[in-house]
Amino acid sequence: AQSVAQPEDQVNVAEGNPLTVKCTYSVSGNPYLFWYVQYPNRGLQFLLKYITGDNLVKGSYGFEAEFNKSQTSFHLKKPSALVSDSALYFCAVRDIGLGGNKLTFGTGTQLKVEL
Amino acid sequence: NAGVMQNPRHLVRRRGQEARLRCSPMKGHSHVYWYRQLPEEGLKFMVYLQKENIIDESGMPKERFSAEFPKEGPSILRIQQVVRGDSAAYFCASSASSAIYEQYFGPGTRLTVT
Image 1 (cartoon, rainbow over the protein chains, first blue to last red):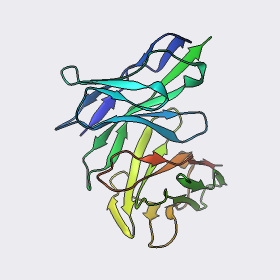
Image 2: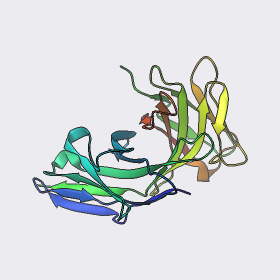
Image 3: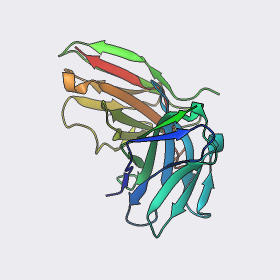
């Protein structure tokens, strides 16, 4: 079965500093990877995806993610964090089940950006 | 450009009652997914439906839970005889097709069982 792991429950960063939220994956076959963000009492918002192609994927709100096949990682990054980026971030992988389109999520990483 | 709509946003039920959660996918989307988020946990897949068909229900509890996506109208997640352990946030997502891999999520229904 496909799985993703987010090793950090929480990441703290100062506004203006670069941020990284870590994700590693375990899949059979080619990985289809995603990042979503969840604000309090809201649904998940799609940020970006890796299907194939360039290892550096650019997404919404200035976020990007780096796919690293040798390290089986898909870390989310942003060059300069904003206080408004504070939220819960989920990494996910497309799980090839019946019909092949369900997402398996990590446990989430709470990002806190402070002034 | 309405996104995925879910209602109600909050639902309180007493133990033993039925809960019905509704989901209207984004315009043009015919694939619907239901996920459950228990307190302090990530999202867990429950069921994947297309119009009038259940494609994958591998994440659905064997009893009391059912889902449908009729030809007309919203998708419904139905929980019969709710128990306290059913208290969670239930999210619906939709996609345009199985080849469009990203799913777009609704705001969720927060079910509280008292």
